[in-house]
Image 1 (cartoon, rainbow, N blue to C red):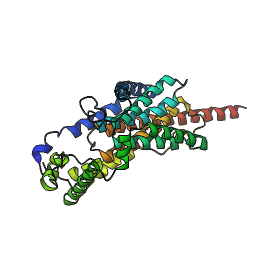
Image 2 (image 1 turned 30 degrees about the horizontal axis):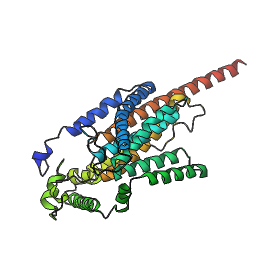
Image 3 (image 1 turned 60 degrees about the vertical axis):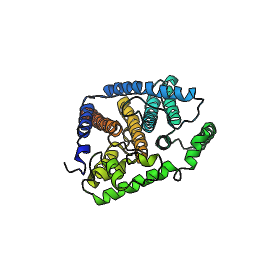
Amino acid sequence: MNSLYPHISSKDITTPFIFALEVLFLSNCVKNVKQLQLLMIIFFLCIFKMSFFGARVWATRGFGFTDWGIQGPPGFFQNSGEYSLLMALCTVMSIPLILYMKPKTKLYWILPVTAAMAVMGASSRGGQLALLVGLIYLLLAYRKISFKNLAYVAVFVTIAWALFPEEQKARFQTAGSDQTSTTRIDYWEAGIEMAKDYPILGVGFRSFPEHYHRYFKVSDGSYLSTRREVAHNSLIEVASTLGIPALILYVWFHFSVFSSRSLVKKHKDPGPELEFLESFRVALNASVLTYFVGAIFMSITFYPYIYFLLALAIIKMRLSRDREREIKVQKGAFSGSAKAKAKAV
């Protein structure tokens, strides 16, 4: 109702409420660790179909480069950038859970490997940078920064860079100065100006393309100047279309998912359930960092990524709280029985 363009904002007005209901529903349909494990297995199986497709497409191209990258299925992930970010999330989320599994099964590594291959084949700089940040976090989280592991990483990066398509290398080398980069910088500057002009409620839900086209577009005759583009930055998208208060809420979502508190450090015998939740915590941290980096280069505020992670974070918080409460009860019962035995003696 307060949008500068009500006819645009009213088209998808149900979207925020649908995501809110999905978070509420998903976070309440998992009651124990076994159900959470089943949920993740189903999720990874669904994603594997997409990751295998992307890896196969890239391999059939001879691991070469294409401007359009890899097109995902119709819907949220059809665009190459959004598809590559989903694959990056899947890569970093699956690795901690695979490391937790006992006995170790090498077959499971097909999922993160094919997902990482899909990121490489999708040709999205934002997705590839997000994947790199997520993998670096995992190295730090598992304290694998030894000289030996650094040597392995250096060898792997050298080989990967050697196999990287020359066109993709050129895109990274010209980042910030090529036409795509300069155009997106224009979008970002325009979005910041919109946020300054309308700091409380923004220009309106989904209204960035229209407002930019009317007041900021530079007609230089290029292909990009004729299109009505989004902000290509989720933080700027929220601030410019929904206002600064909404931006604060959106950033708070990320902090709600990320957790620096170890679930097993203070327990001598945490048990398999708490150990799984600790691996799950690391997986969520890596995922939300990966998402945040991707969100800097994509307008994905109202895409499923962050809301799925929010629901998983709520599940993790509840299950870890319940498990720690059980451990305290068990310790109390054990100490009580020990005291009773001592009195009897």
